[in-house]
Image (cartoon, rainbow, N blue to C red; front, top):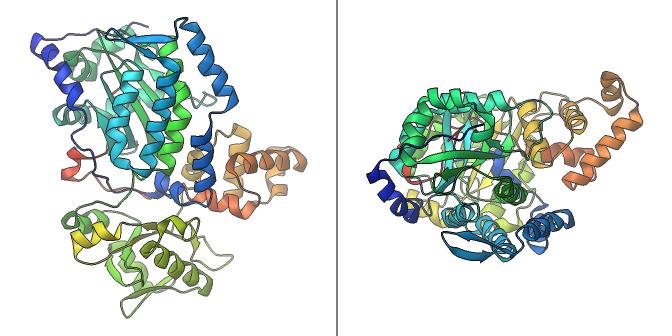
Length: 477
């Protein structure tokens, strides 16, 4: 396919270096989030996962890296005339990406290095609401607020282009590349291309998908300037090598944390959520309950307001809840899987889970005057399809493995799954064993808990102040 034709004014061209050098205008703000990407940071596998990530690159990917370097006989590639050792640059970049899991404020800087490594002027990493065509959370490099505002107006077109490209069986690591996926007639007629891309001289856009479901999309978006030309196979391959590291870093990162929402906006934001959300201190003292949470407390079926203290009705659930809150107030690194998916409902009834997300006590005290240390999300109607899809994408499950996970999440036994899909129980058991290995669990109960940690309660419309903080990119943007 043809690349997007640039129409760059002289003034726009002269501003390119300035825009690229200024990078993201929000280095350290972190926005509100659902557990879809955050809860992964709180599983018991965090230490092992993170250690494995930083210790080494998988042998298969090492071979692919060496293959790329070998193809560049000199072992270097040039960016604006400066040679750079490709293998060294790749290793350093992986380190930068994993640094973001501990210091989310590093994301704009890391994204800038990703952009340079792939010969781009701008890049974004984001979470989008596909059903309402809105950007929820975003970190970016090289994109000014005015351009983001213009991009947002075209999100319906962007998301439509992406969703038409998604087909069953497509490799989860395959990027959407505008110059390959879109016809010339489309790009010529596209308002988004005409109004957002051409004025900046952008000739190609690539989307690498981190997590994807029918409702939400997490991705990294790379924008290529005319001076670099459309994406080449070698550059796209370098992007694929980065993808698993970006996916894992985002999953365990606090880039999508809820720690730094301004208190004056907090109540309005939480009240916009259909799911129940409560904020408490380490002793369970309720600092805020949104409308949905207030209704649950009034009903008293799962949770109760005991003289201002949050308690769970079931004894086992209350013990785990109180333990999670104490850990949030102390050393959140010890939280592990505690509070990740607390079963509030009685056995045999419709599942209701609470997810405890630790907040920064120092930050919350400065903003609210009280040490709010945890946000508790209550999901009363889990979207099994979204959970399973997000989990399958994050762990590279096959289609057969993903449908087994979905069926188990819906409460079916292995025998029932085998009958439903017309295969033997041994086949289903083999598929489940493969899922166990990929997910790092050994029991079916642990698997269900892990999948539930990919739950994604709806997120409110972006805050007015989000311009200086994350959101999510869309389609061809």
